[in-house]
Amino acid sequence: MSKKELAYVKTQGSRPRVMQVISDLPVGGVERLMLDVLPRLLDRYDIQVCCIRARGALAPEFERAGIPVAVKYFRSRWDPLGLYSLASYIRQQRIDIVHTQMYTSNVSGVVAARLARVPAVVSEVHVDHWSGWRQRWMDEALDRFRDRMVVVSKTVRDGYVKATRMDPQKCMVIYNGIDLGQFTKPIAKAKAKARRRWGIKDEEKAVGMIARLVPHKDHTCLIRAAKLVLEKLPQTKFFAVGKEEVSGLLNQLQGQVAELGLEGKFIFTGLVSEEEKLQLLAAWDLFVLPSRREGFGIVLVEAMACGLPVVATPVGGVPEVIADGETGFLFPIGDHKALAEAVFKILTNPELASAMSRASLKRAKLFSIENTVRQTDQLYRELLAEKEK
Image (cartoon, rainbow, N blue to C red):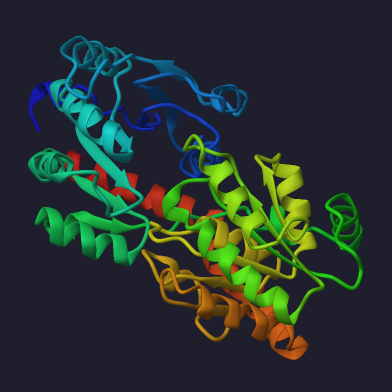
């Protein structure tokens, strides 16, 4: 390291300073994961978050957890004033490790960190999907300026390495984790309350999906499968939980429900609170995720931690989460008939459903937040040790 870089390294006994850079902090899966992980590292690191677009709805929760949140606004990924402002702020804060999250920040944050001569830079990606060749090219071009790339599954790693020609040794898989205790504690009282609230009768089965209302989550596949299931099991209700993020999509999906005669049987709840989400997971008999692409599928782990069998497409890291035939079933992308068959098989076979429930609870333990924290800590320690050589 140069003398300027060595100036960053802390004296023995002090805590290294880490800055995570992200566009903003909305109520999303990545942001929730950060909120779970970062406070658990505060006994080992001084940690702060810097947003480059806006604070976001979760910013106050980070601050209540002891994680300062700053904003250094960028008009674009290569905004020179933004790069100068962020680089200056990084140097002012004497940051040892910059950890960027997702594509936009992985560009702006990496460049600013290197301008600030930060000793260690790590980026994180949650999907191996780019919106165009420019994104892929920029990721490939900036690879030389990163010390590590964190990916959320082996599938994402393989796709990312192939597309960007990154050195596989720089790519580290850290699975997303959850606080298992938060999900394994729902009891019969919570189940009964949720079923009453959402109009699920004692004799009815309930199938649910939690996902943003965007095209690649493929709610249409579940709607079509629901039609087939209800022809054989009319005492079944389907739920789609999530916020509309593409204008007009909800109306389109509701039109499909009406066209198939599923009113009252297929319910869109909209965005729900964390407490309501837990209640719904406790109330359902089966969880479905028909996505056309996923990086990892953390919601599957949440469902499994509640003891739900899961049925999903084999995209991204999903096959690393679901043990096909043990915790649930995998089905081909867009194949609503295969989805209906899997749902019907589980709902009509109590012994199979019970066995899958037990297997889900067991497998969910592989994806604990403690494992994610431990691996993140290990990564930071390795980076600091390498820079001190």
